[in-house]
Amino acid sequence: MTDPRLADLLASVPDLRLKTDAGDLEHYGRDWTRRWNPAPLAIALPGTVEEVQGIVRWANRHKVAIVPSGGRTGLSGGAVAANGELVLSLERMNKVLDFNRVDRTLTVQAGMPLEAVHNAATEHGLVYPVDFAARGSCSIGGNIATNAGGIRVIRYGNTREWIAGLTVVTGSGEVLQLNRALVKNSSGYDFRQLMIGSEGTLGIVVEAILRLTDPPPPTNVMLLALPSFEVLMEVFNEFRGRLRLEAFEFFTDRALRHVLAHGAQKPLEDEYPFYVVTEFASNDEATEAAAMAAFEHCMEQGWVADGVISQSEAQAQQIWRLREGITEAVARYKPYKNDVSVRISAMPAFLQETQALLGEAYPHFEVVWFGHIGDGNLHINVLKPDDSSDADFVTQCEHVTRLLAQALVKHGGSISAEHGIGLVKKPYLASTRSEAEIALMRGVKQVFDPNGILNPGKLFDA
Ligand code: 2HG
Ligand code: ZN
Image (cartoon, rainbow, N blue to C red; front, side, top):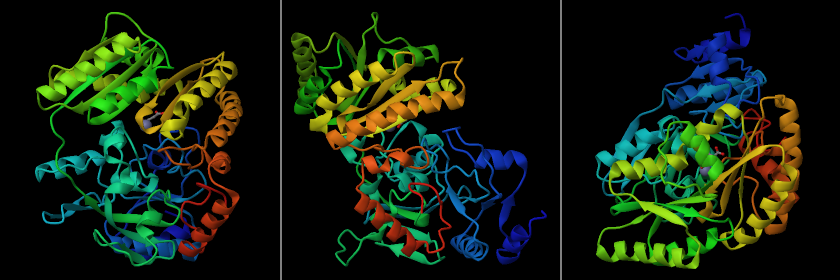
């Protein structure tokens, strides 16, 4: 280890675990975007809050940038280290610290994988309800940094709703205990909420107090086949009106083809252009009858052409796999991803306009649509053809994203619904946030991170 800065780091934080092998730099320097070449200085794996503080103080002395790092499953480049940064991986800080039955809270270290959080809550007969396909690899700290959403937002909201308290190390190395699990706390600015979704630019989340809730009632999962995009919101309204929805997701025939090619089981005899997976509380005859009534009404209206309802837990999982397996199934095509949202009421007009826009702009690329339609959140994955270079492909897609951003401005939407801005969406931040807001964000960054060492270049340029 020849770099004198690293020698000083080890002198300042004596027991710190540090990795500098080429393979580790590569592994920890990238996220799921795969667009940037990783080039971190080193990887630090602290085991305590004090060690995190020591690293931050060292970084301020040497003006070395820190990239806070969880499971690196992000899709916006928020955890990429491509400029000699120190990656601060929370992966060793992955334990449950406390469970409080009265408060119904679970205190965890930030590096805990989401699935481990789910399991820990279940052990106490409760649930942490934020959930999505990357649950096994992503970490709760990363979820907090991006205010992650997922497949149950329609019922439970985003990560933000479930954070009762945070312990954060700021850019100047102070440790803040934010909100301390209070249910009511009307004592000025809520820095906890400011940290949530700040993408590691204001502070490093080291611990979180998570709110837990009762397990949902028994549910059923239904797959619906739709003849056209236009009826999607009609079907949503019908099901939402009659049932307590836990999820309402959609995907296209192209998405289905990829998931089937990746090993999922064909759900219906015939093919249809659009599909919905919906999960809803179903614990008695009345709810079962309501589900059938919604289905039949949609069939009569011609909004739904076919469908299947889960008869067992295994079948429910099979249906879910059709939706949850999409990201993995298309990963080999290095997709260019959009993650946009509009208000639910603006969805029909926005869908129509976007469909026309993308159909015209991308006649030569395969476009896979899916998403959390019940939250007004669309994922648009454009697949890279084998004969296109990475750079050409991204340039062409960026051109279309500029058009999409204009449509978002018109419909009052967001360029990032749940994946964060990171590096990928940085050029388009102004389509969602006003100049005045972005100027205030810069001011806030200056307060929490005066030397600009925390994840610089992500979200906006200083
Ligand atoms: C999902 O909803 C994730 O499955 C990933 O947010 C979306 O791969 C994507 O574009
Ligand atoms: Zn999503």
